[in-house]
Length: 287
Image (cartoon, rainbow, N blue to C red):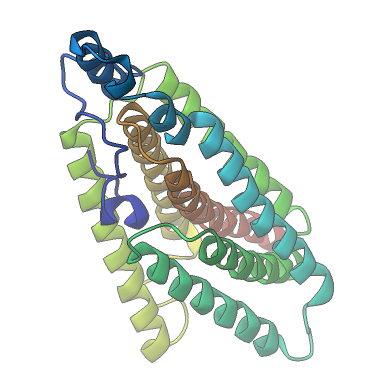
């Protein structure tokens, strides 16, 4: 099962010499260890029996994924806070703040593409992406907090955390079933969402204003909710990909790939939630 996340859809996790997971193999078992035990039982010389311990020690675990994800997200948060403090909004020249945000965002996007097309996960590249993504989020959050509502960022952070916790609980309880049909639906919806966003940006650039009106008013609220729901679906697909990687015994270093993908999804949710709460708070102020 591939994820709609561009990092995970690039390729599946590698395996540390293990047998593929099949419907006859319970999730969470180690096929490699089972195969090793069978061959070891038939071996006459114990010295020639393969040792499963090195492979087991180098296989990715959920603790590895949690640790790498925490490190990547901590980098995002730290750089966002530093950008907020050290790059205050220039109310006399707001274009300067937007220029910094756009520049950091483009650099983060370029680094994410570079990692996506790398054969192996590079921690330095992933952390550099997280740093520039943090600068981007810090600046746009500061601008939004200054011109919309001082509490909008707290609302967005809490909303993002609530979405993550809700999807994680629903996935662990098996209320969400990640199937091929689910994957196909999310992929089609994501393509449509991105195309509509692109069209809105084009109309906004040439016609001015909010283009098609997808980021303001009632239509903007609907579009923001759809964006958050899509992010929640991405999270479910990411959880499934991580679960499959652990079951197949992916190498430990690929936990960085899992962390990178989860960070991308959480950034997506944060940006969509920030847009949604900005519209809601803006409506309250104008009422």
